[in-house]
Amino acid sequence: MGVTDYSSILRETNLMKRLTLFAVGILAVCAVVFADNPLLINGAGATFPYPIYSKWFDMYHTKNSNIQFNYQSIGSGGGIKQVTEGTVDFGATDGPMNDDQLKAYQDKHGSGILHFPTVLGAAVPTYNLSGVTTPLNFTPEAMAGIFLGKIAKWNDPAIAGANKGVNLPAADIVVVHRSDGSGTTYIWTDYLSKVSDEWKSKVGKGTSVNWPVGLGGKGNEGVTGLVKQTPMRSATWS
Image 1 (tube, helix red, strand yellow):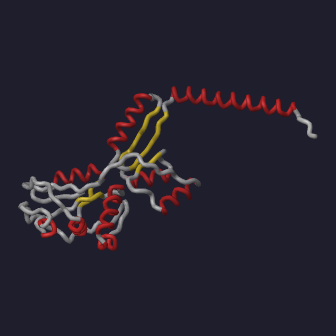
Image 2 (cartoon, one colour):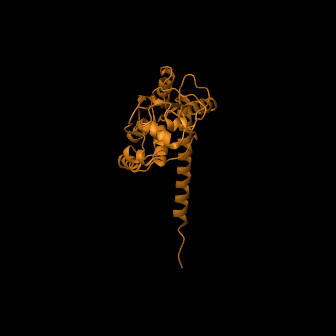
Image 3 (cartoon, one colour):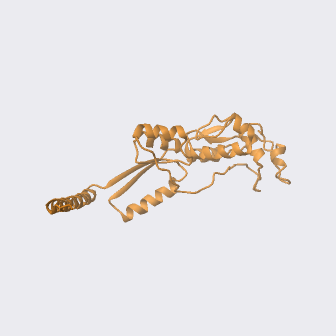
C-alpha cells in the first residue's frame, strides 16, 4: 500500500498558485504596455479587397483604439512575398498559394501558414467602347480568343454573332491586364484555362503569366485608369 507525500502536493499546489499569479501579472503588464504603446499590425497583398479591408480596419480601430492596422495594397504576389519574408504580420491573396510557395514558407519559418477566406467577389471583364450603349454578350470562346490575340476587331464574327442588331465598329480591341502579381490574374486565367484548351496549353493559370497581347496596369487601380484613358472607339479589358 502506497503512502501519499502530502508535502510534495502542497509544494506543487503553491507552485501552481505562483505560476497562475505570474501569468496574471504578465497579462496585466501587457495591458498597460498596449495602452501606452498601441499595437500595430502590418499587412500587405491583394488590391481587390482593399476597400472593405480599409473600412473594417477603421471600424475596428474606432472600437479598439490601442490596435492599429497598416495594410499596403500591392497585389497578391506582393502579399505572398512579404508574408513569406516575414516583413508583415499577414498577407492577402485572391489566388491560393501553390505547393512551392507553401514549402518556401515552411522552410523559412519552420511552420505552415493558415489560409482562410475573408472576402467573396467576382472578377469580370470590362470594356470602353464609344457609341455602343447596349450591354455586350461574350461567349467563352470569344473571351479566350480576345485574350489570345486571335480576335482583334470589335466586329469580329465571334463577337457580332452573340450581339445581333448591335452596330459594332471595325475598331481594334486593346487588351489591358495586370502587370504585377495578382490574384485577379489567377482567377481570370484559371477561368480561361477551363474554357479554352489552347489557353491552358499556351499560357496556363497563375498570379503572373506571359500575356499573349495587351497593356499592363499595376493594381486594379492601374487597370481601371488604362480602361478610362483608352482612345475613343477602341476598347480595353481587365
